[in-house]
Image (cartoon, rainbow, N blue to C red):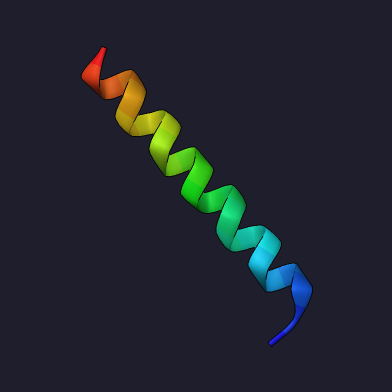
Length: 25
């Protein structure tokens, strides 16, 4: 488990949320 993995996961989650928000618009 490395800190880089956490950063990548957070970035992916944030991107998914933005995509969902854009789709809802």
